[in-house]
Length: 304
Image (cartoon, rainbow, N blue to C red):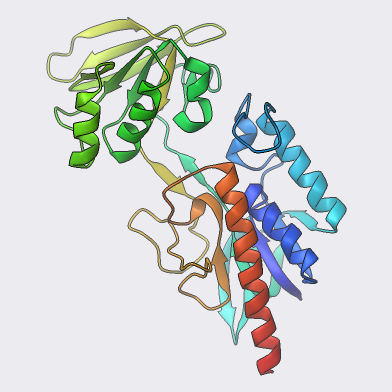
């Protein structure tokens, strides 16, 4: 029987665990991956306070060491479901069931990939899913943004203030982004649009060098020299194990205390509905969720 069960061992989950232990809660973190957290794939992180430049892997190692030295228990486990039984939370894993008074879902989200040749090979070598994270590495260079929604155009605008030229590649002949973002992007002199087009391949040896493009209306195939590829074709939250109120694409809806629609179940980090996917915001979420969980657990014990 645990006070607090945290599902996910990335920045949000480990921060929540540190706070949970410091608040005197019997806390365990369940993490299915040997190296957790999307940030672990980043070659360099330069926007996390206190670390002017650090690899994502090293940053995650520091998170884990800090958590373990605080007394956090981390267990390798794949979670299948979470259910409520008379106020107790039952977490079902591949290795059995755990019982807790409260649960924090900190399972993150994965950016959807194009699934084209070269994408996986050149990840962190010019292929990125986050302009805020990697944009500064492309100062004065030419990049493409793949997508036409709010996220794609928001990051195209960010990149336009850094890169020399930004090309937005979109499979349709009009954007899906809101009208305000469309207006801002159209007014940027160094943003160009390539319509009715998809990326078929990303080429390069050690770094991105060019992309192969296909026009969907004419079937014309062209190659384009480019320094970076930023992909925004959707994000998949890892929330299938819990039955709470979610957005139409699966992000958990929370209130200001990061409580979900189910009593005693909280969400932190990229798996919840949020406008920013950053390590620093995930860490903040973890702290808030743990404090809220402590308040919930205290109230449950008091009522008994």
